[in-house]
Length: 166
Image (cartoon, rainbow, N blue to C red; front, side, top):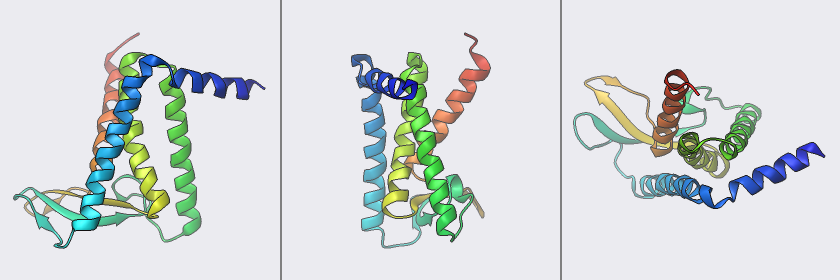
């Protein structure tokens, strides 16, 4: 019974008027990610496409987690990782509902990006990554818009935890 009450309180807290701003951030990030991936998937004919001497667009399908880690051909492992990612998103939403304004903003950034990549895992069974940063022959991991927001959010959470004392 406590779990049911907790879930109801979480739902009620999410829908509060003050959270509309943060929910809008989540949806904007999700749709920016969707639009960028839609454009790349449907209009990508040249691989890689050179923007300048430091950035390429190069479509890579990532079946792992961030930056291609834990990529595998095992359907069971893929489904397990996808389930764990979905669970993390649910926990983030729960933490979001009881956080201070600055933390809600940071959670919004992470949740928006995470939902974008989670959507791809469910629909495509992989996440399209396409931004390739490089210098000469050194290439960073290929990533996408959702990864940018997730990374910024995690860095902000870490800095907040290290630098700001309640």
